[in-house]
Length: 268
Image (cartoon, rainbow, N blue to C red; front, side):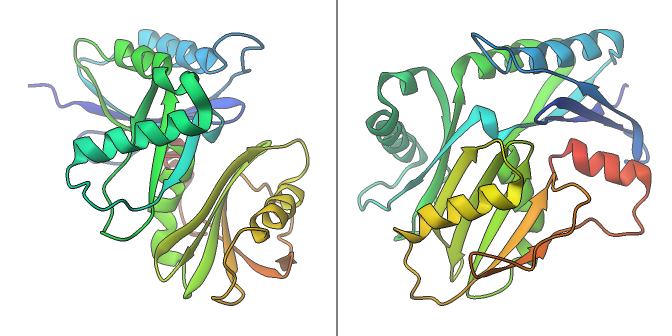
C-alpha cells in the first residue's frame, strides 16, 4: 500500500514555492522555488498553475495529497455583517454570494466562494477566487492526486500566527511583494479588512492603508499593535507606522532550512 506523499505549495508573488513531506517521518524532504511571472492578459494566475502542472508531471508520485496556498493578488475578501435568520452553511454561502455581487457586479457570478459560519452577532470573513482557477486546480488533481486544502495567503498566515496576536485591539498584516493584506480585530472580532496592491515598500503601503482605514475604523478601543508577517525582507522593521506600534512575526531562529522551506511553502 502506497502512503500519499504530502506536497505543500504556495503561489507567491513571483514564484511557486514547493516542499514535499516524507509520509513516514512527516519531515520535509525536497523543496524548491520556481520563478513565475504573471500573465499580462487573460488569467494572471495561469503561469502558476502551469508551473505546478509541469512540476507534478516530472515529480509524479503514486499518490499525493496537495495543500495549496494562493497569493492574495488572486483573492477578493469582504466582511459579512451578521444577519439574523441565517442558520445554515448553505444560506450563509448564498448571503456571501449576494454581497459579492452587490460590490463587484456580474463578475462575481463566476467566482468560487468560501464563507465559514461565525458566532451569532459577529462579522465574518468571506473570500472568493476566480472560478476558472478553482477548476484548473481541480483538474490537476486526478488519479492519485487529491487537493486536500486550498487557502488564500492571508488566511494561511493568520491561522498560523493567531495565537501570537495579543491585546484587546490589534492588527495583522500579511506582506507579499507589491501587496499587503491588513485586518483589525477587537475582543477577537473582525473590525476591518483590506487587500491592496502597490508599488512602494510595504511600510509605505501599510501607512496608506491605515490612513484610509482610520476614516471609517472605530478607534474607541484605543491604540493597537500591528503584527506583521510574510515576505518582509531583511530590512529593519519600523517601530511605528501612523502611531501604531509594529511587531515582527518571525520563525524560530533554531529552525532548519527544511522547516523554513516548509513554512514558506505553507504561505507563512
